[in-house]
Length: 252
Length: 161
Image (cartoon, rainbow over all chains, first blue to last red; front, side, top):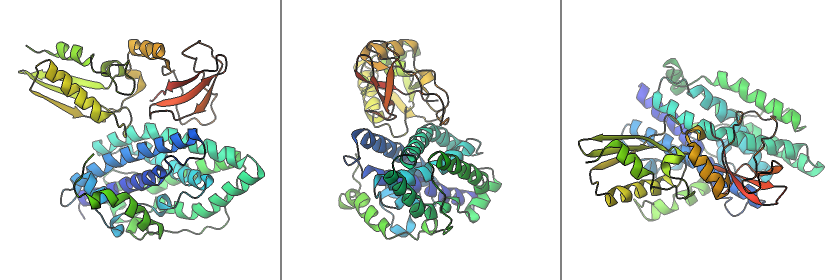
């Protein structure tokens, strides 16, 4: 594998994480539990889709055969998406949505911080832009985890259940294979083991404040990074790709 | 004859579509203007990466240049270095306040989770007794506040660093 091929694959992962989570959150437009949250979740969705645009644009230029970001976003088949399973999980109730977001933000922020030092200047530039937004996202999701966890008995139990249900998908965010090895050696991306302890500490600090307990069960599900998705992915893609498949080459 | 300072003046007449009292120069999103033999090249940067106004802003710049009979131009978008609210001009901040949007305050890093809450004075009555309603407001760059003194809800242009 060449450096360029590895970079392409890595950019797809980051781009797909942003795109699919952005798509999930966009489903809540007009359906948020309260008006302010409706606006917040769709603002975050917009940030993520903006980040996906930058990442997939770069991926498309690094692809073996050049592709536009729209082609990458809308015209791949399910197996070709390499987002983590976590981000494609359904919105569920508000606690599920916020827990999914928190587990992701707590990983994305240290990743972007460390990408600022990437030897790839364009990727470092994207990270600088995205980091400013992600700081807001993490603060927002952390505050909700604390409010719900340390809230009523009902909210506590529900968000605890969300944690039990979603944590098993989060470890895949730290997936590594030969793509990462090559890019780490070139100083383009940080190693997962330099992000994982920061992620764990954020979880520990926020869950402590929220009176939530980390599940003892350490099941880990993975597959998304290798194109093996959960049953929810097909439905998500059907909706997301509808316009581009129905009106080929359409642009806004 | 076009020169760079003339182009900057023209750009002062191009307004942010979301905050129409601010020119794109006040907002600090014009990153560079170059004129080489009557060919104008302008670089702009988005406030947020998903900012939906970028396309409109580009079109508005084109319209303005055409109106000034400038036909040879190009507009680039650059994301690095990333835009921060520190690039907003002092005049811009005054215009924002007069328009009813609280300008960005000197904030600590967003990643500090348990910091003291930020005081954002009400742009209408200047009371410091205001409360945050939501970190996210009517556009990506604003948060939603309410004044506890005059009861008026207002937008706060978030500090982005």
